[in-house]
Length: 251
Image 1 (spheres, rainbow, N blue to C red):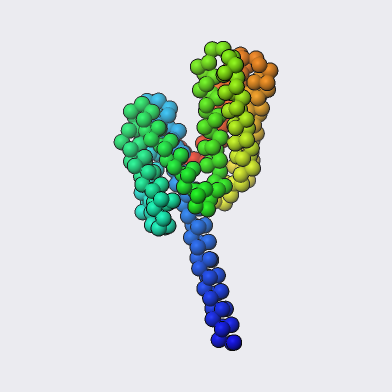
Image 2 (tube, rainbow, N blue to C red):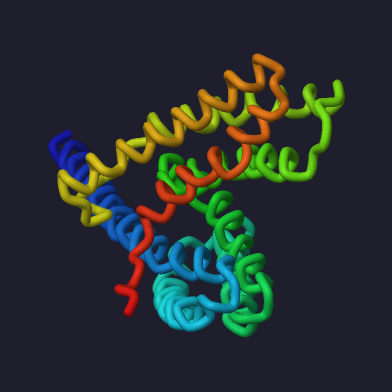
């Protein structure tokens, strides 16, 4: 009986140790995800800003490429499941290297980098990281951007347009609520108390912008919808998203 108990205790200790190692590895992976994201956001932004930003776009793209290669070399074999892990790394590797060759060619590098964001949105939640703040922002970005682009080209509030905007607005409101509820680990991101206060101010600015558009939509005032649903809606979000990037000091 004592031998059996001893074997059981040894087994439990091994499981506990293995669990502790896995947890430590996941914590390290989470920090590396954060560091990679901080390097990713600047080139994503600069590659969408026009020819005058080619130099910072190239500089931040080179930095992100180096960070990505180090991350991929470290974690490609972290999980043996090709379909649910390595396939995403392969897709991101192609997108990152494709973007690196296209900096300065219109917004083609930006489009390639968008694929990285979409792939991370699949990778992280499926592998134990469902509350990564910039993934929540990516989920919000898509319907918000749809509203912005739709209103930019719209000339009249047709029934079809209003129905489409109404459905998209509902999706957008739900997605922004998820952003607001998502925890941000200030330690992992290197944020001070002042940084976090600034972030919460940015969240409130986008909430106000979204509420303003919702009120304009409810009123049916098309001019107000276009005013509140384009740059006024996107601008505060861009600032909140950029907050998570490590931007270089500009000369």
